[in-house]
Length: 288
Image 1 (cartoon, rainbow, N blue to C red):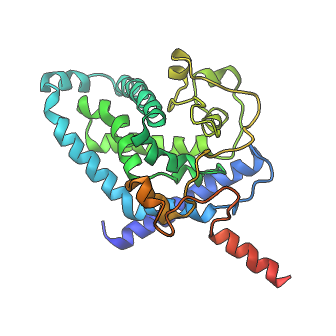
Image 2 (image 1 turned 135 degrees about the horizontal axis):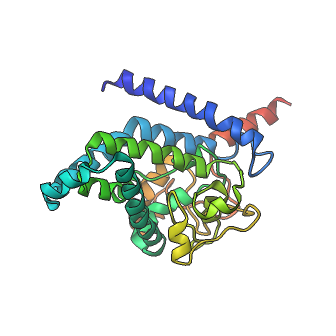
Image 3 (image 1 turned 120 degrees about the vertical axis):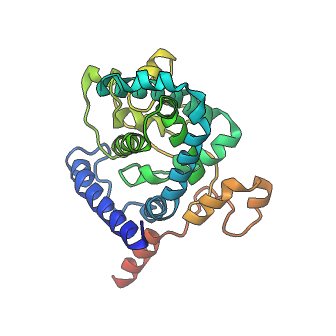
């Protein structure tokens, strides 16, 4: 795929997501009055463009390489038996197995210091909407995508089918991060929803709700939580850089080094980070 095709696909994707999620966020807002160009939207836009224009190929390469590495672990006779099953049964098996794996892998991201260094990039978002879902360090993405698709790879699903699962989970991830509240009553015990995942992004690092598509794993292992209101704040309690380049580089370096490099040092509490939306606001104020 050439650069023009990638740029066209990126433009189509952002247009599709805008048309799909912005009306939902305006009609069924979780936090009423939140603007489309809310604080730090430009940082999240950089993550979006980075995923599509830069890091998407790296993730697919890593997944393909990982698939070849584990290819010989499952006997071909077993793979043939799996392939002989109805497609809907295969889909259920993959979703349940991947949800089990990603639950524990995600929970480990919040417990293990090394994994948290990269995962807290995602949790540093202080406002949730469809765009904030893309705030994710590329190495964290490789970890998550690899774990989620491990069952499909081991069971012998072709890469094209795995890509379909990635696309589905990608849309689902955007939905549960969106500024939408559509209470589904008792069904929320079986189907994930923004009202659940928003509490996962609470300031508390161990807030719960680690599951992916269905919250059943959280219910089974005692980490399910769903208060009847939105969290007051999203983000992390740690000091962390606010801009896109620093959030990419900071986790890669020992903290003793990154804290001494200008531009990589974490933003102090009450310190305003330089961001496009802040710059635009200052310009608007100056024109009054």
